[in-house]
Image 1 (cartoon, rainbow, N blue to C red):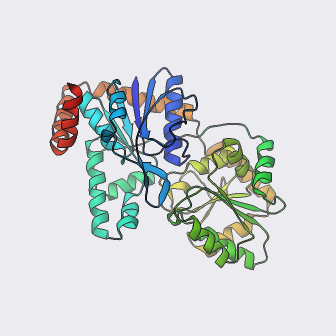
Image 2 (cartoon, rainbow, N blue to C red):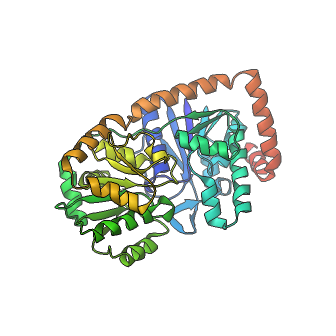
Image 3 (cartoon, rainbow, N blue to C red):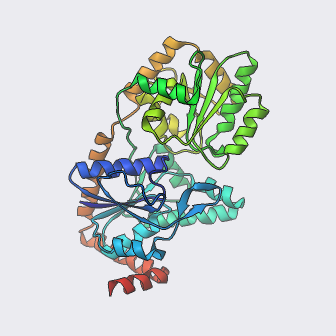
Length: 412
């Protein structure tokens, strides 16, 4: 199969979506497929010996998140010349980068898979501060997924969110995998030395965007309550994001200045593994996320997580068996963490159970992915699907005259 993976973020930006796409694109060639990653240009010199082709296009930094870039692929002539030389059998994308994926799927009459992985209403509302505009944005999201041949969700929670947005079609829950690798104690020592982490006391670790939507305030307020109880511990926040300065200020206001370690963006996998090993508990109380790679990465390193009840991140966790759950309130977070953070034997048992039950290897996930890709390609050869594609193609090109003009120009 010749597979196109279209994404808005990719290496060297190591966020959840970029890492998922990387693992797809890394695994598929090893299974005999050709893979092409289409993404905004982040670092023109970064290629890293990929087993796939990276076809990037010029992008601009996003306001409030300068580490991310976005752009219209059709405006980059150099990108156009390269993508015209590629023939795909199937395209796969999340929402924002989907317009280029949809254009190429329509042009080449190949199936399109759309993965739903974000609570877009929350993002639109934060950007516009207007419920009406956020609702209009969500309608645009649903219309995109209605044009896909198959829609995947990364968790049951994300599938429910898409249903709440008004999507009525079939949704396939396709969870992401994790890279199963051995624990190296040297990584722990290196991370502790690099970031000056005191391993003589419990360590709470958060990995992800430094963005209030991740419920980081709950971690800080819960930690402040623990400190008032006379507990000694460290909170390590690994990542970067639009609210980093505000989070730093809040930690100082809460009297946590000496307790909190900010590592910045961690690109080195060994260092990240070391941070997971340093942690007594991995704290990820987000209610926004529809899936959590970092919870699984922590589990691979034998570190249990404390998560908000009812969240997508908590779906694979049984409270007190392979992790800990709390109400999304600072008081309950502090109570749960405080009752367990110094019990090394219990944490070790939870971590071992998490390692055994939570992460699923990428190889196992990719076998399912390839089977669905192949079945979808076969299904799209039927007359019924050909008619559907013709309607989508006609509607897409009618609604996007600019794309049609570009398409005609490069077809000549």
